[in-house]
Figure 1: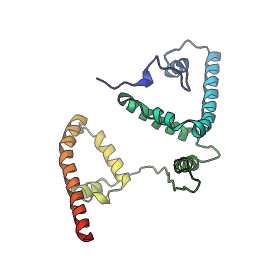
Figure 2: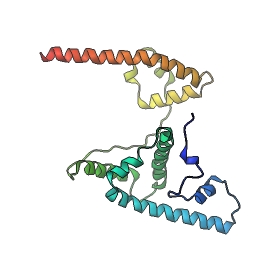
Figure 3: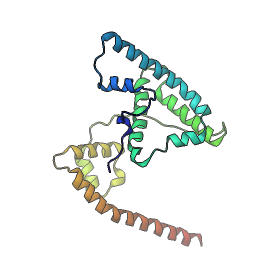
Figure 4: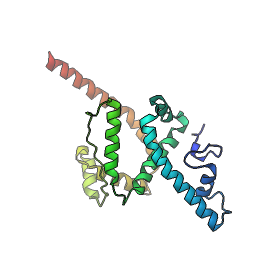
Length: 209
């Protein structure tokens, strides 16, 4: 049974967007005049602005059980909701470029407020780091040498992301074959990780005696 994607469900009730708004943005309905298009875009913008204001009310007053229910979708819809949350964050990042308060400052303040709400104390303070660092050119030979020599700890996040991207774009890459091989290797990998954890615990117990 395939995963259900509520995003594409035409019977889905309105959220920020009405069913008519979705048809308009998805291009499913095209018989709009220039004037009606302008009106439609204006109504969508107005609802978006009001939705942003509503989040202050939701954050402060929505009951915890209701919030938890919202973020606990059925298993078959989780991927769609995860994509929606990801795109929501991306939309906020794009929308606040050039805004008078940088996105990272609002993100940090939002996370801090959430942590304080969880702790029920203004004394709960956390450091939130958010940086946008573009991935540039990597030394492919150097990366391959590190992998060949099992020097995985020396690989940077930038090298890993770029290398995986290049690997998946190569003609020799097969998602199905990679998935099958990785599944086969994962059992052995997990066994080694668990064995290492057990040896560590045993060593800690010995040192504690």
